[in-house]
Length: 254
Length: 330
Image (tube, rainbow over all chains, first blue to last red; front, side, top):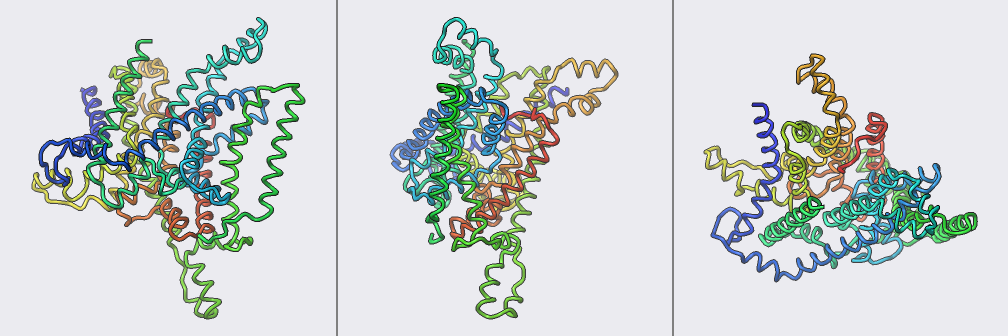
């Protein structure tokens, strides 16, 4: 009996989480423009979506910024994690404070402070500044995912490699990096999703000429949302779902 | 924006000196270790953080403590306490003390801050009330839910945060699904959108997973033998929950509270879309100071106040969880 009640409770929470998404997906197939009336099934919002250059450009900006920011922050962050791990106590504590600082800063302050920096140094805001901002908020998350793996590692493994004649560079590439591979992948995935989902920081660090999806949707809310955006959400949802299922299947096979 | 945005001469000097000091430190380390020690791997990151995190915060502090001409002042914080401060000063120089004295204290900023804190508190409390049982049932081994349920909670978070919020807009509007249902049931339409309730709903919807995950993580790490032992020693299931499970999940709860409270205080998109701009929160206020009014000095002061408030609440929460066991989502 209690088991059934527990299931019902979880079911209700999941309905709460999925209801808006389900409504969006259904509305994206509505032939009419009105949200109130159902005028038959149609795919014309999807056709409009692919013909809409503003949205397609924004999609490209979002994906390319997320990808580049992930690559750069994963490299800088992994190197930094190895560096921080081999530091003595005092500098290590200082670096950890520096790494935790962005997490305690609200997004809006991060965005505004970067905006001030770019205006102050007279750098025109646009694609590059948005990318720099994304790398900035991604990197600490990479470090926080890689460091625990380094701490868990048996430190004698690295020394054993050196004793057996490995150069420090060889030991780094063939012992240290493979040991924390899982942490690096987690950090990269986290960085990518954070970058995809970001609105606040992008809003303050880009110009109206270079829009990512979030800032474009934001300006669309002022003009009134058309069902094109429902089609966009539905597509994104399905793509993410497939991606997640693919990743899940791969991890199960291994 | 004609607010002084050109650098004072000494800022170039400071930046140059900082860069030289950094290079000197790196060189010293190379010389001491006769080669690149591994701790130097962190130097690109250190330089990056100094330029893109420390320097911007210093800039905010600089603007918060200066006036539009660049001189030191505390007026920006006075303007936080009294939003009519600037107007009164202008009247004082134009029409004298007597006229200026008739201007009462403007409480817009303080009121917005209090309102934001109240909304964030409500959101956090409701997320905890809804999320704790959910996390408890998810971690329940007898339910045999495994990893699938966790994935089900994550998927909606992968959708763009703005699209999720807009989805609620179409549910709540006058001709939306909920109102159509209400009408069909003969209850009549209700104004659901553009009020405080809609904003709160949007916040809960967006932040609930951040409450569930940390609690779920700390509950699923619990040794099942602990509750079995409690049962053997004569505790009924309520008592086990209250005396054993709940105290041990405190780190997760604290981590969840932090992860919900922080973004709720500073949220500035949800109030605008679901509240229709009728209800302003502290994030909106800061944004307006910078982008609409172009008053960087007062905007920076407000940002500093917000950062300070968050640091204080974080340190209070850390006291309750000194080992930081709560962890994050992972």
